[in-house]
Amino acid sequence: MKLLITGGAGFIGSNFVHHILKTYPDYEIINLDALTYAGNLENLKDFDNEPRYTFVKGDICDKALVEELVAKVDIVVHFAAESHVDRSIFDSEAFVRTNVIGTHTLLEAARKAGNKRFHHVSTDEVFGSLGADEAPFSEITPYDPRSPYSASKAGSDHLVRAYFHTHNLPITISNCSNNYGPYHFPEKLIPLIITNLIEGKEIPIYGDGLQVRDWLYVEDHCKAIDLIIHQGKIGETYCVGGASEKPNLEIAKAILKLLGKDEGLIKYVQDRKGHDRRYAIDFSKIKSQLGWEPQVTFEEGLQKTVAWFLENEAWWKNVRSGQYQEYYNQQYKK
Ligand code: NAD
Ligand code: TYD
Image (cartoon, helix red, strand yellow):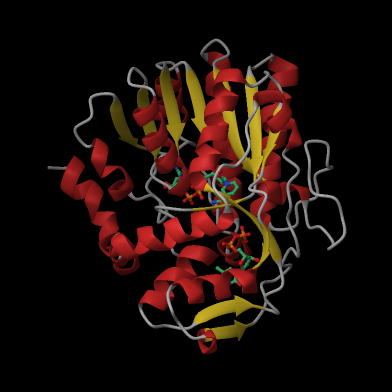
């Protein structure tokens, strides 16, 4: 099987490239990534000399390029997105462009190439915000996105479904909760806390810190997508959760403890605009239909993640200094 992975140089996409190349010795991957600030080829340096892996620097909104690449593969697994809520609050244009127009460009190319199999990676944030006692999100929860990020992802989900109903495009969608693990860009909560603490800095907690997220170890997420692309029912959506609902403050305290640091380093800062209070996922559909459930507990996943950041200081220091953006020039423009 030949896969076109979009956004494979980002956090989850690069973990998925690792997962597929290690799990399936005969699979080939083309990774299409624009290398925005979030794209980091150092995540994939293990495969610089791997004949089954090809990197293409390019934009998912580039129609000609996308058509050329989609025609070469059996399936598109679509990760590429602008993914950070805070950035979407400051400037949402790139979110609409990449998440909506980029997804549309890929869908059109898949249709024109004879209805190629298409898996769309999305988020639980499209469902909105839950109260403390409300039931978790599931596949039948109405859409209610509340940030420019989640609104643009919701738009992309609707387009993917529309291509199934209108054009019979063989699609699946996964809506997952907050991922964490290796190669997580240190602007997001968990890697930001870990790297700040290793450097002896304070950790910013928005508002009262009691917002709740469900946390999914990235390897478990990759396994869920693997199952969906092989065994998922065409036209269906699957909610993927980590069975680990935690308030942000509890996460901060757990990482402080793992790194032996003082709780005085917690710094309460101004809350995010329109901050969603709680996300939670009911993943019983993928559990009963495909036999998937998370294997890594939050405690185990957090320990592994902290250990990974301690062992890979050069990786995140390169990200923080901007040096990681040189990797493409060094490796691909020799
Ligand atoms: P990320 O921000 O780490 O990576 C995104 C990747 O997409 C980067 O490599 C970037 O260079 C690339 N990209 C951005 N715009 C592009 C464009 N126009 N053309 C080509 N490539 C482009 O994101 P992530 O955290 O790995 O998320 C991957 C997917 O999973 C996204 O669709 C996101 O919405 C979804 N998701 C993420 C989480 C999470 O916790 N990180 C949770 C739920 C869903
Ligand atoms: P984030 O990692 O940005 O993911 P998302 O907004 O997509 O859930 O944030 C996770 C939670 O942590 C969210 O409630 C916002 C909060 N947060 C902070 O309190 N401080 C921070 O510095 C960041 C980046 C996030």
